[in-house]
Amino acid sequence: MRTLNLIRSINSGKVSEVCIDELVELAKLNKVLLGFLRRIGYEGSLRVLEEDRYRCYMSEVARVSGVMSGLDYALFKFRKPVEHVSVDIDILVYSKHLREAVRRLKRAGFRVEVLEPYTVTMIRGGTIVDLYTHPSFAWIVYLDGERLLEEVETIGVKVVGSENVEVKTLSLEAEVVVAAAHAIYKEHIYLLADYYVIKQWLNKKALKLAEELNAEEALQASLKLNYQIEKGLTETPIKLNPTQTAEILATKFKKDPNFRATTINTVKLLPKKRTIQQLIQRIRRKTY
Image 1 (cartoon, rainbow, N blue to C red):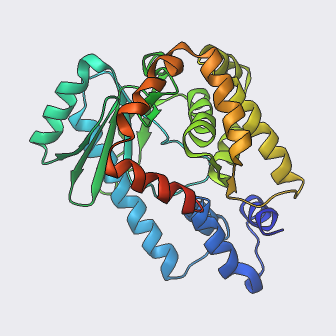
Image 2: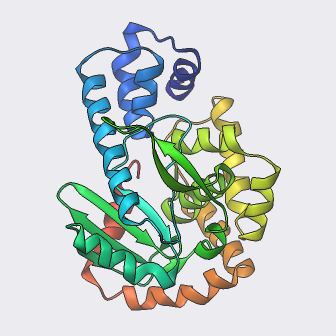
């Protein structure tokens, strides 16, 4: 099993030269590439490129966090047990601070690219910042952002040319809930990146938080997928089948008042050309 081989390589730091190219491609799809290369001690040009990209990304994280200083915010989908270079910077912010956050980022050279009810996407050069008041998809709120912002920690991130820079992030337990909910409710695809978050950071506090946020089904589904992965019963990335997804979302609809109240917003999205394009992309994609 390719996925099990990748997990063994990440966990042990050992890999067969015969299958390394295959595992590199699998690691890319599963958003664990840099961590994989680091753990096996890979010294080729790909490692150099990924390390450079990671340094640039962390420098941008530090700069953006500096811009947000004094506001109630948290980086989320940020802390990972196995490193990967993200394509954007996801920030959770209170609704009352959103306008100020946008204003500050504009002053720092960012422009608004997409404006939606619970998300503002801003771009400067190759840096993308997604500001969320609540984690959402298709204008539907699937986690309460204000509750998540009660689970904030300050950590240091390493930036080239300076000492560790302090940034605000979600707690590890909150990241567990976010990873499960994002994969199951929003993306309907489960990656090894998600597997490792759930595997290494799940605890009683995370379980309690999932219950508070009406995300137990997402966490339960993630645990079942982790079991299947470890038993070699499936390969990652895992695309949830439509029936499984519909059942999980139906349960979410029944239990979560925020999810239920905002579901009506999808009607406003249907006539938009961008919505159809996004749906086609979601059907065709192998990862997120």
